Length: 186
Image 1 (spheres, one colour):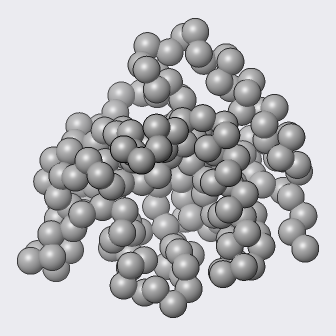
Image 2 (cartoon, one colour):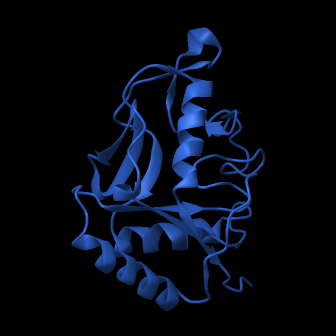
């Protein structure tokens, strides 16, 4: 896993809320894009955009949470006829991001309850990307979830080889900041 620079720590949900509100406030006026800042929960030792083997999801569901070079098969639509070498365009799936603090807070709480396996508490870091700091890689786009307008997918909008997708996801992760969850989990 790439080194993740530790910027801040939070010990309570209130700490998290204060930092997120400050970030949203700072960038609301400056944003040129209707989204502006996007948030994502990252369970260690995963990076903001890729997963480590054994840390990609619910225990006992190997097919759903299968990894292809750090990308979960359930996050993108893979072309099965190429042995999962190509990702197909699909605006109904992709990496999950939160657009609002309330969505982020609920997601962080839920994922922290299962961070080390089913009903096994653990840290759930918060990462964010201020979209005005860099361009979106060609072939990827933030698409709102039709079921929840606070939830967005980082979706593939064109067919691409997994190596190309992985390169684009890594490029995005370089622009993301991470706040380490230092909550005590008993």
